[in-house]
Image (cartoon, rainbow, N blue to C red; front, side):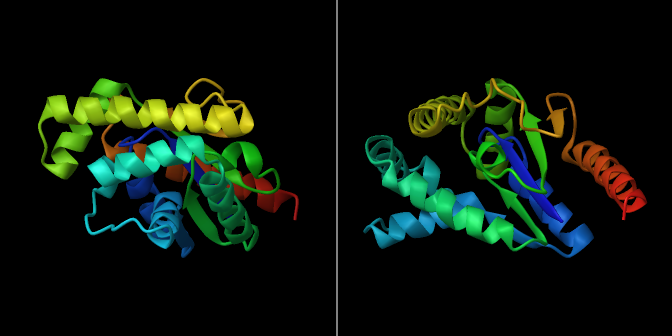
Length: 192
């Protein structure tokens, strides 16, 4: 089983990926963690769990915009890991780039809702969270469009399931996704 979860920052990708990994005993791979390792390898000091929201994190994001090699290396590493099977991964570009035998899920919510979630998660002010969400969204959209022509947050064509999490708790999102995965597995087993 391969599951790829995508969505904008602070939408709930990591929490959902951990749950799916636990349910199905899958390896849980975070694109963000791989990208942090790439940043470390390029001299960035990452000593904060919320590093992406720091000056250093934004400096790396800005460097990524000008240097596609970071994201191409990330995508190459992710592609190789996802090919192994028995994996759940959070990744922005992989739903468009990985074509064979995976279930692709998009989680969606407005910037305002994601900023509120970031406030709770990271214990920061709403205005700061909103500024961070806007910057990260803009960086991610620009990077993926320049590299691959992907219209992040607008093109849902590669996804098997799109979940609007706007009014849903993470527990309700988990229920929706669990039902979907069980049905998909049952449908698949009919043909084996």
